[in-house]
Length: 220
Length: 320
Image (cartoon, rainbow over all chains, first blue to last red; front, side, top):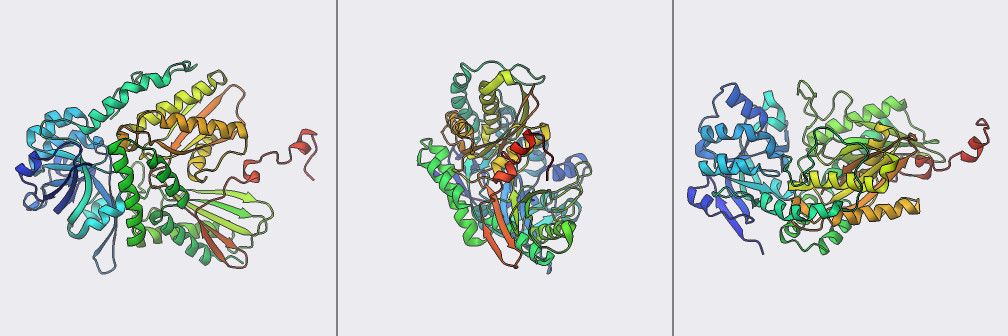
């Protein structure tokens, strides 16, 4: 059985240090969404973070909700699912420094180097969503919208949403404060068998430029 | 007579059903895959997904917030009586997409490829895609919607006849391994393989094979059916399960569709549908009645053009 942990947000240093690879995590408090448009606006264009963000939430969810603005101006949140995080690697060091974020939630993890050199030294860890399609479970965990920023400019998918959440999960701990990665460990185990799968299959008649020939390579 | 209004209403309904309700054939397939899974993490992922399907149905909310690129497959019977012409149907489908995006709600994923601007309703230039096909001796219109994510798990390669089944296996492994790592293609999934045709047809055949056939359905050519099973077993022997964790759950089913191709080539495409294989179909009859189901029944003998008019054409006769 995998270990199950509940964490109150904003997460304190002790709770984060206690997270172990492969543990199942549920969150209570406020999480915010931010992806490329928000990062660009703040980090490249020099706009300020929404006031008080750091005191409300230190959890950045790489997410675009299936949401709608109702006629009375309130929001309906349907499904909530993560988007692939590796694409945001280049923003993270500056973002963590600026926002004080300690937990990143997303899809698929980040490269191991990011955990060792960017997240762990800043006291931050990565949680992955499960299966990637648990939109209904996570949607049920969202109790309300605290605030939404840049909605008109960026649209629903790219806006910064602040969700008040309860029993929000499950997530799996992918990285810890030692900079280890569950995905990398599991990937190494899978890699051991890969060469055998190709044994006896003849080489293709035409090769392609730009491809790796080593199937244990990380592609993200 | 099938009105534009009833097409709009039925299309809105299937948008909703596809987003929320897991098709039964896929649920049975995933349970069967899960029963053979020995990897602890992969097993946990699948158990959580099954819990998620149930939550979606109970709460009437989408299974996955990435409601993909909603699109339509339309099959029109020769005897179907409908108003407003074909463009009337297309307008109804566009309207249903926008309405469902706001009401379900679906995530408005569609943006302009260069300017990244959007209409917040999944409607835009060349979007949603509408594919048309026709059916003899039928007085109905079948409308199927598929919500499939778009970023990972699909690839194309021009193989050559000499590459043969080895080449097919090699490219399938390449695709499943590269996109299966970290679970980027949201496996375990239904895999569609397109073989032959021209490059664009090959992509289309593979996509339709993944999205428009039921789990357990086999290609009518017994040798292709055998290859489907063989490739499915190969995918599940990689040692990779859900989210790329150690395990055996990669392929819930594998479907191959073929098209006659260039004598020098063997084009191949691979498509992975996702853990929430989202499809729903409505049949609108000319008497105004509507019936809903999860089996698109897309690959009819006429659709595959299996042997259609072959005898006559091979004798060089013109069509009567």
